[in-house]
Amino acid sequence: MIITTTAPATRDVTFPSRGSTFLGYLALPDAVGPHPGVVVIHEAFGLTDNIRDITRRFAHEGYVALAVDLFTGHSRTVCMASLMGSMLTGREPASIADLGAAMDHLIAQPEVDPERVGAIGFCMGGGFAIAWGRRDRRLRAIAPFYGTNPRPLEAVRRMCPVVGSYPGKDFTAGSGRKLDARLAKLGIARDIKVYPGTRHSFFNDTGKAYNADAAADAWRRTLEFFAEHVQSPRPPR
Image (cartoon, rainbow, N blue to C red):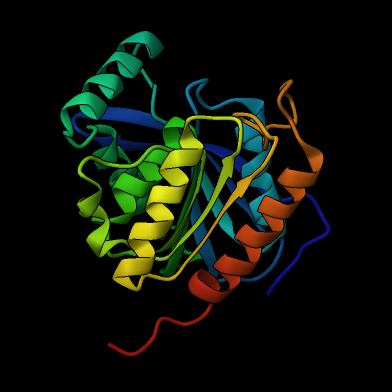
C-alpha cells in the first residue's frame, strides 16, 4: 500500500453522461502508478469542501479518487425529489447511470488500474453506492455511510463486498442491520457496523453531528476493507 505525505495533485474534470456534461474533482497520489481507484459519492449537499477533503484523503492513501457532482446543471431540489420518487417506487435512480459514466472516466486515466476500483458514498450517496454495487461488476467493494437500501432488499443478491457505517441514532441504522443480515445469508463479504449514540453525518467533520471517535474507526475499517478487497489483485476468473 502506498501512503503519500505530500499534497496530492488535484484538478476539476468533466465527463459525459445521458446527454449532459457532469463535473468532478480528481485527486491523484504523489507516486508512480497505476493505482487503485475510488469513486466518491456526495450526500444531499452536493460536492462540498468536505467531500473534496475526503477525496484528497483517499489520494494520500494511494488511490486515484474521483468525486462526482451529481447535481451538475440541475436544481438540487429537483434532483432530491426525483430520488425520493425512486425510493418510494423501487425504481433505480437515474444517477446510477451517471456513476457508471464517472467510473468510465476514472478508469480511463493512465494512473488508474481498472481492475481495482471501489466506491464510497454518504447519505444519499450511500444509497446510490448500494444500488450501484449490485449491478456494476467493475466495483470491487463499496463503503456506504448512513445509506438506505434498494427495494426490494433481495436486489442485493449480486452485491460486491460491503463495508458499511451507520449511526445508532438515525433511521438508517435499521437499513444497516437489514443489509448485514441479508448479505450474511447470501455469503457476501461485509463489515457493517452501527455506532451507538452517533447521529446522521457523524463522519462529516464540518458538521454539528461529527463524532471524532466513530469517524476515525469508520475510516480505519474502510481502509482495511478496501486494502483487502480493492487494492489486492483480482482473483483469477
